[in-house]
Image (cartoon, rainbow, N blue to C red; front, side, top):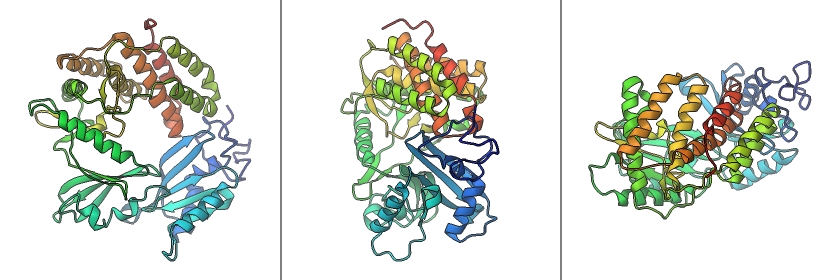
Amino acid sequence: MVGVGLSSEGVSPSTGLPAPAGMGLLAPDPIFPQRDALLDEKIIGARIAAFLATAAAAPCERKQVRYRPRRDLQVLYRVGADSDASLVSVHAFASGESAAVYAQALAGAGDEGPRPWVTHVPDLDAVFWAFPHDRAIVGLPVLADPPPDLRSMVPGWSGSEFLTYLPARSAVVRCLDGEGRPLAYVKAYADDRGARTRRAMDAFRASRRSDAEPLRTPAALGYSFDWRVLATEPMAGHPMTELEGAALELECRRLGEALAAMHAAPVSDLPAFERHGSRRLATATQTIALAVPDAEVSVGRLVARLEATRAGGKTASVCLHGDVKMPNVIVGQHDLAIIDFDTACFGPPEADLGHFLGVLRAERCLGRRSAPETGRLEASFLDGYLRGGRRFEAAALAWHTAASMLIKRAARLVTTARSHTLRHLPTILAEASQALEGVAKI
């Protein structure tokens, strides 16, 4: 396959700049011909050094990519080492559009004086933002030194530790007291999703019937509409991602029980589950086919089978978490806490179950888990769910597992643009197809 818009000499034909090695699994993108250069750590490292007036030899690492072929390209870079490191988000635009975006950024800054936090790179049709400035997250710059209205949500908040940053989407900080102890977590959004998340969190908390339930959920401490910032209480325990072996099997069973409790909660005032609808299947198909044309036939066949066996479902809709995975689970001594309710919705229970199974199977496809271990974790998880007094339809579970693997796992290999994982795309598509085996038309 021709790689990433390369000529035979290894040079991007659109920019005349060397293209990064290892990205040859992606097809050329006529809307973002500069993609190759923007993914190149050496090229962008030099541009960022000029932007920030730092040493050109400072290490530059590509930390994160959000790439949707012919629609969007954002790259987050880390420049420098240790405490002196800086984050810079790079946003690509179609031909000539970056100038207008840059002008808008300057106009929106008002009379702040010099603006070393944003710059325009015309030859790459890109705009660079230096953290903590962001194209869309209005609350991000104030989280390090929050104004009184934000501090009032977390009494004693005297320091901030940045944990995650998704350019133009969200950022999370840990709020610390004067002794460095965690008081809360605060998430800044690019839109009003935080308000919806707070409503979902409040509803789940209100539905809790006793402290004996196997599930904890954090309380929302407050939400600022002006800053689009949500504060939540910290959950005692340790991340499920730290476990392995028998301990992980045990907690998968407890996770199943906790999810059963969540699905039993009398909460219905949530958005409808739409992630596995025809539109999302079509979007995933297009994402994969445009970036990896060799996969177009296999993904097309998979989607045709999904549509032909679409899970109508006989189980009643329930309140779903929407993103059940180990990083969103905090293990306590006697129970579990599930965090991050941004995708909470109302839909079939098999959607939550299939999402978690899809995560496990994708990890197996990527070589991170063995087949026997994956089987044990799946069995423990589903056994816990049944022990929690809930039921599921096997055919619907298989369908949602396959749909989740396509939409959340296979398409993500493209959108993150990591060559070492993208090469596993055929395996994950085959695994999704295998999940559909034996599924009768519902």
